[in-house]
Picture 1: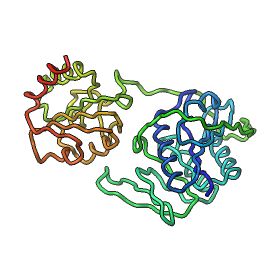
Picture 2: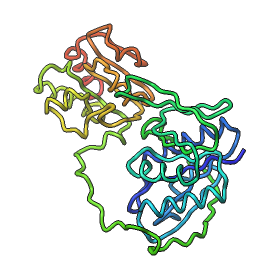
Picture 3: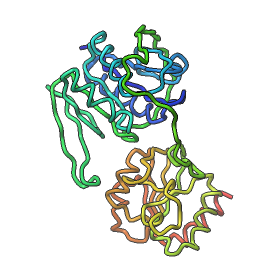
Amino acid sequence: MSPILIIAEHRQGVLNTDTFGLLNAGIEFAITLNTEAHVAIIGQNSDNLAQDVNIAGIHKIHTLSTSLPYTHNVYVKAISFLFNKIQPSSILSLHTSTGADYSPAVASILNLPFLPDAIAINYTNQVEILHEMYSSKLHAKIASSLPAIITIRPGAWPNDTTPGNAPIEPIDLDITEEPINFKVKNYEETPIGDVDISTSDLLLSVGRGIGEETNLELIFSTAEAMGATVSSSRPIVDAGWLPKDRQVGQSGTKISPTIYLAIGISGAVQHIAGIKNSKVIISINKDPKAPIFGVSDYGVVGDLFEILPFLIEEFS
């Protein structure tokens, strides 16, 4: 079977870290199909970025260099060209504002099925994705024949980055500004908070069980002793106790740390959707029936105000 083609995402010379989850989704799908996983890097700095995506499980990296920044037309033309050249079994992209911009257009131009926002991919005699709806309250299965265009939800697969040694193949494609209907004049970056919880290996997350805002002092003291980053569930952010950039969940940041320590978090469906790729989940809650225990590897039923001082003492 022909290879899976993965479209790496980058901006202004920097790889989107969620691309590693995308790569692992593509590698996993390729193994299922008993075929190869190829990556395409389109645009500026493609040769340098090729080294970043060269991870174990990738068989070949295609670079299409152009001096133009990302535009819809550049990617549609480049991916259509690659499809005709490689004839892949499927094309995988991130389900971001960028991926959701060009992927439907590519699917329309190539007359291929479009399967958006996948959190799981299966294959028997056709490809089937799992797609969440209504704030993760409902799972829908969407199936089609191959080849298909599939977008992958950021955070749905782990960001493993074991180095690989795939060959790099530059591809010549003349893309000039002449056929481009519009061009990017500049980028306006959204404000970045004081932390990036998506990159933390150890997260200590707090929920409404903390009771009062003043009790956050105990949370930050525990996190400092453990070398953890503080995050939270949505109610803490809605109350204005912590900024939005620390929120974990469906409407916050989807994370994949090595250890996720949930303190006083009941475990709403939307929150669990954001933590399911954590390697180890540990929960502390005084309610033995809290839903968070259903997804936890380890759970402690008890009063967090009695337990956390012991953690501080142990790690100090």
